[in-house]
Image (cartoon, rainbow, N blue to C red; front, top):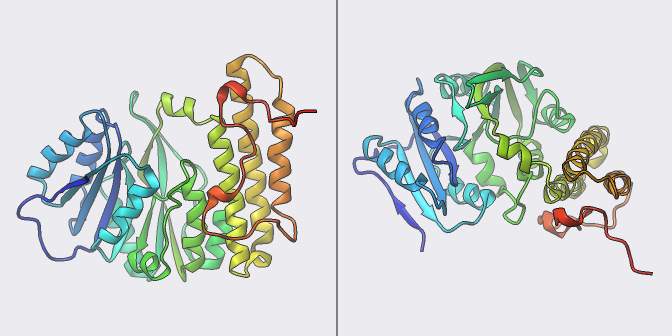
Length: 340
């Protein structure tokens, strides 16, 4: 049974911001993340941290930190995946605004202050900031080069999001008006293991009336060698394509695909390039190239098909109903062939 714990003395007054943090086997990075939250110059916030069945010391680190930091509410549950964790935290959030934080990343001290100030000043439903690629081992960080400043309509921001250069579908460098999620029943797809942000963020932006963009980098996006190795697995390629097609189906369900057709085509081109790089890395690691071209062809064909005027698929709200393109097993990376 899930176990939850709230530190004694927690304020019953609803905070302005709720930070939602997922935790899973990150004992090495979690203390720095928690300290970066504690160091925020904006103080009217709460942090909800859900341990998703960690087998290391992550839960002990959370409970010890909660004893001396009343803003922290901690919950423990059996492993269900990132989407399920985030979906559990959204209805628990008490803030007028909410944001998401991965437990191995860090925030700059003025992260909440700058985002909240801009959200209030502009009346934006979503406020986005720049971010750094951060390498914890060396301490080096590099500011993501493509950034914009300004206030956009939700429609214009969605076009920008689909192009995936100046605005990305990451959930974590954004401050959201919580009512946007509640009123539209927005949830991360619980059955999707990878690229759940790409599946959901276009929906969030579609329902937003106004979006504010800050050029300033305020979020540290951790880069780990193990994560980079896993990031090219066939399962991720399937979910990347699945998430992209899911966006098309959502736009179709809202009668809006015609307005965003060119921007969706740009997203497909970006996805196709990413699949090419994933396939190159996978086949290079295996030191064999059999099936490379046929796998690339299958990925490209699925993305081209998703841009057709009429699709054989319909919107169900579940991306897992979109079929795989490649077999999930790394040992059998070449595409399935029908037996003759």
